Image (cartoon, rainbow over all chains, first blue to last red):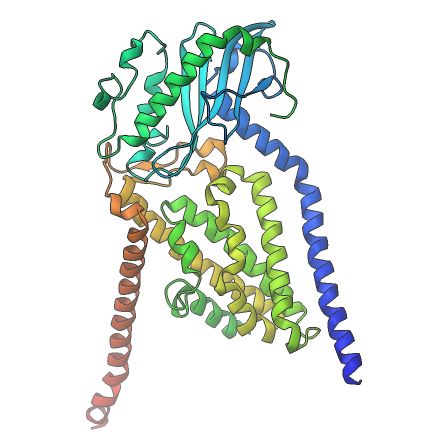
Length: 210
Length: 231
């Protein structure tokens, strides 16, 4: 075999492996597609049901959502509102929103609010806060974030909706004030927005792709 | 061949352990070991990759010429890792989210291409398979021990997040060793990973030294007393 033949056969072998590798990935991609989509939906539904109890609504939360475009919320990250209804009557809304100025990057929050303006629950979905300090906002790490449940604008009064260091009623963490302060302020902003736009939030046309 | 298998297992788990002796794949080793479950999860994914890539590379070792072996190895490893990533996303979604970028980064774990080049490309399929399994298990054990160490010190728990690996019914299997443990913060921060690995290395070397001492003693024994016994 001449040098030319050798080059060609080597190129063919390399090409064959490229094709085989792509084939393997394509096959696995195809056979896992349904399961992967189901996992993503299940995970999102789980985080929704952490802030809106499943028994208070009968609609499909994931397919009843709107995108909010308001200067109150960060323009860089989408704020999605999932609307819970029972027999067609609005009962609660879950705001998936991002507080961009965390200590170590944006913090994604899920905030569930009942139709009466009381918080049903708050959860941190994603963050990069310091382990052992700011990560106390995770429900797995501390019960801090559970203390929002039942609160509303008025309980505590608006002027006291802040961490203790800023004259409010909410605890900060030892050695970490920035993270809890941001979460408290974001929850407050969201509550104020909900109180002002409640009817609009539930009346708006469903947004197809959340 | 039995002897060779025995040798491979010893090499992978202890004498030539990828994490403790070859010090390969340090980036994931240090980054994901904040908890035992994360370490175990990445360890299993790495082991699967090693077993598949070693087996495939051994199968094709006579087809691939040395000029193109490195690109072919990279192709094999990259497609294996991508397939594993898709499978994790489908059935272990929480773990997939937690390990994040470190799953695709398995491709760059030098331990994998190292075994392909040093062993799988020169040996028969069954041996390459065992080598991948032994090396992967050795790596997994280091990840697990380091993760457990850092989790106990840093958070006062062990096996928290076990549901990510075993399913929702295992959510509560984790053991809280110290209630209201405020945590030894250094252990879960990146420097804690380096310190932890350093301690593990020291322990391993200490054990090796002890064993060496003992085995030389055993050898010396008959030598010194042999003439006396003959009398």
